[in-house]
Length: 346
Image (cartoon, rainbow, N blue to C red; front, side):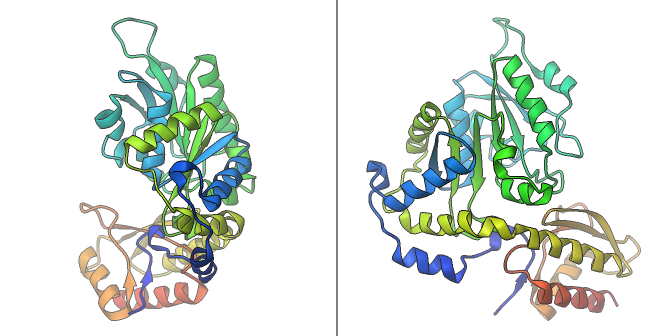
């Protein structure tokens, strides 16, 4: 059965072009650096962000953890957003596996940090305190509603890091969505960063994988971290082939997903009982009005069972849903969703 799946852009699946490239991919043993397709993906990814090198990893979570393990020693501290994916949704891997202490600070509505919060989180050179080693940003920021972090805000944090001999890592899982939304080259969003990781799945539609980019010495350390995390792969060119299609063609069409998200939000706003909370990039947040007799689970179940539309509540204690558009949600799908919501709430 075909569903219109708005639960997340993580549900996207490979395009026909990707499947063809995967079937024909030249492969080798990546642990020996013998996989030509992986090598090509890493070279193109590094060049795209103006970095010296890159390493193909299994996921964004693994890429972030490899970065933290490469930048920090056990007992070091990092400054990180209190709603960031690294802090909230990666199982505390930095502490579990790296002995790294997170020092969370508030994330502003535009996904930025206040300079005063950065300064207050920076530990002095005191033998009683852990050494602050790193600052981590997220772009686009998931829990800030998919908002794109502006280049000037990144530059402020990069300048702070340089002044204080810190490293800067960017969790750029959806960095190409940010670039599309801001109308800038992705390289501009990595300026001043020491490392950046981005996902090849989600809006780019590859079936799996992320890439971590940075300097040569940093990537050498990150590869060691990947190994101990069980992330070294063999004939990974089958996956990297889809990643190359993602970088070469899919990143340039993400604006369509943003337009569809805006169209979806505008259409939903015209339906009685729907409250639009926010819409950024390919994210749409909306709530069911308190006066509706229909509960949130009943609403979701009706869309699934009667109209083959998948949505999921954003949290169990609210009436809010978060939708994400992606390659497989086109204009006709948007119209079907709007018609179904009208019918369910009528």
